[in-house]
Length: 256
Image (cartoon, rainbow, N blue to C red; front, side, top):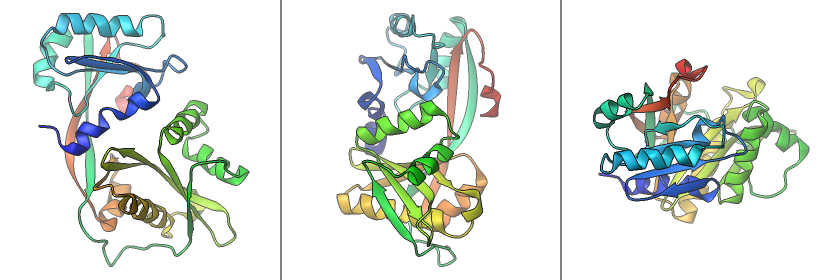
């Protein structure tokens, strides 16, 4: 059964991506960047009318240059049910794990949090702030444009500043109904391990609680950041996920 948090999450991409959906499937796309996994994917919610659903999904991606792919989301049918059907239709499955972490406890007394200025940015940014955003996105133009679209759709960008006013850490907070999701946590290399990331996340938490969001969460795949999130008060559980790609696995997918 879906939690309230999950119910909200599955609809968020519709704010800034093309989509089609019915009771059995959902598909989202961005013709401006067919290479983006997270902007071009489909979900099979169940196997009822699966042949028709898959045909509609493949038609939806025709002409976009995006490889047809399915992604496990909270409302996906279980992989154990999907595997025989997808394999029979030429899909190759890549499984992976992530940790979904929900804010459930108080911060650890061992947490290092820098006492610095933190701002919530929703409009114009200075050149220095834009530079930090570009670093967060590894200077990938599409990642920057996608973050801009998320902000325009209601997300909030939080930035922490050093004593001389230089932006050094950031996190994006995206709302899902009553839930608030943190992503893109980044701190410039020379300012890491000094409490700036904790400061910027705590400002996001304060904002979310003031607005009235009840579920604050994030996803984590690396052990290093997980230790920080646990000190802040997040607790998680391992989630099994998968991608299913039509015909071939794309280059780089093994990094998952």
